[in-house]
Length: 54
Image (cartoon, rainbow, N blue to C red):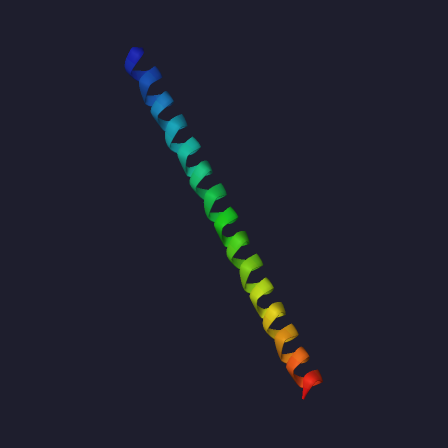
């Protein structure tokens, strides 16, 4: 009986860790996307300001 509890607990921990990893990956992906969007917007703004100046 005790080994069954340990087994179920182990599966629960594995699932919990997988959830944490998936959440972390999603957050990292979101942060990367935000930075890429910000970078492209700032590049566009720089190009616009240069074209307006010249």
